[in-house]
Image (cartoon, rainbow, N blue to C red; front, side, top):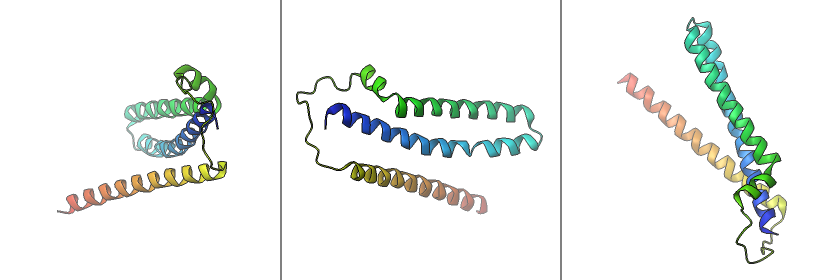
Length: 128
């Protein structure tokens, strides 16, 4: 495996991670719609604009990470400075993808447990 191929895989895996983050961020549109229906029009419009900007930036990042990885590698000069043309990496592609899915799933579970613990703490504070 060449250093360029290794960086291609890593950058595309980050792109998959950002797709997951895009789905999480898109759920922020529902509270904005409910906020608009409750009569807070100006605040809801500003929230909607900021949410759409965040979603557009995430889509742009995903586009570059998944479809323009060669451009990223060339701009950041990631392959410069390697003495060896190939890297001894004896692992099948499916194994690399399985490891990436496990890491992304672990990050997701740890984030959810942190959010739920903060939610429980807020409930206990309100009750006290």
